[in-house]
Length: 287
Image 1 (cartoon, rainbow, N blue to C red):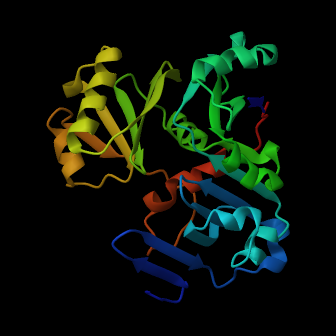
Image 2 (tube, rainbow, N blue to C red; image 1 turned 180 degrees about the horizontal axis):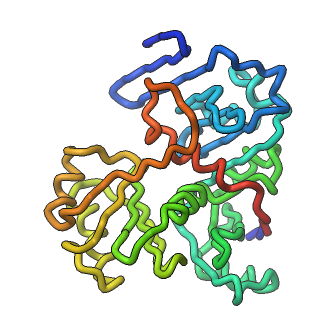
């Protein structure tokens, strides 16, 4: 174990197949000769990655479902991935993590924290600040980390740190429970007095799975589902089967969709929320 096709004036392409959705966007003013003014945001998923290039708060370029091999050996995306950017933020996902209060965190104890994660020989452990009061200790595949090391380990962050930060900036109340769903994973986040009281994720497939985990979380937090304000973001849509199932237990559901980037009207900001939220991360210390 090591510790450490629809086209419009905005140049948007949409491909929809039985297995995947692929989006490509280029702003007419996008110019990689000015990359040193841009920020590159990369979202790593299990079998692919997405990226966005931004100028201040404007979305300049966006691609989804890209081949992971492009990260370590760019071919089709050589110009985009080899440019020199002002800032780079790479978000790595992890289904297994633990939170350590900042007051109790010690670099000397990283190996002991890692024992909580059941780390295998082909995995690495990273420790970074999740917010101003908690470190997140999480594991990732060695192979995954090696594909992004050329962007600098100091630019690698826990993928949903941005979403956590966006929720914290939403002035959460005592009855607000945040739910983010993406790629079959449900993230639940709850704040008390402005600080993280609960954060965990679960794999789900069916409406029953998601409702069960939502009920489990509220029970652990001693919340009454009928009084909870469930703030959903990610893949759920108003009126879909998952939302309808949740509404049987949580009558107060709204959709959390902070406007973190300026995007053309053809793009729903929810589609790029995880990527856009990486703009809130900055650089973090990795151990």
